Length: 161
Image (tube, rainbow, N blue to C red; front, side):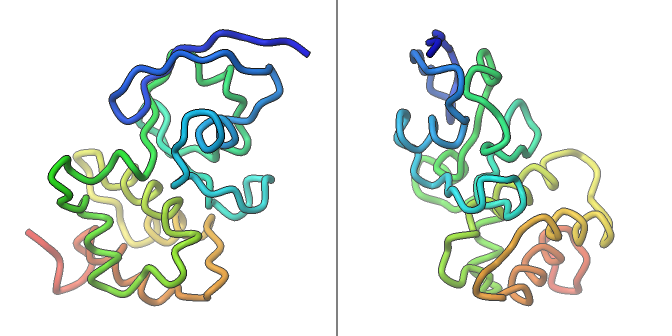
C-alpha cells in the first residue's frame, strides 16, 4: 500500500493530505476532507452523482484518484453558494423550477451545469441536453431539471438577463 502527500485547493481553501494511491477522489472528498455534498452512486462514472469541478472542468470524481488531483483546484457543491448564503444561479434555477426531488443526484447536476454555464459562451439546447444525459435521477424528476437548465442557458422566454 503506497501513501502519497497531496496538496489541493478545495472550495478556495488549501488542503494538504496523505492518501493511499488507490483512494478515489470522491472517497477522499467525502471521507477525508468532509465535503459530503459529493455523493457516491454507481462508482462507475455512469450516474453523475459524484461530479465535481477540477480545474474548471466537470469530472466524475469516482473515476479519478485523489493523487491525480494533486495540485488542482476543486470545487464541490459546498463551494458554489456565496458566503452570505446566496445561492449560485444554478442552485437557484433548480430550486425555482422544482428540479431538486430527493436531492441525491442534485449536487452532480449542479456541478455539471455550473461548469457548462461558467464560460463566456452560452451552451445551445443540444449541449444542455447532452450534459444532462450523463446524470441519472432515480426520482425521474427530469422535467424540472430540464426547465432549470434551459432557463439558465437562456433557452426559454423566462431566461434571466
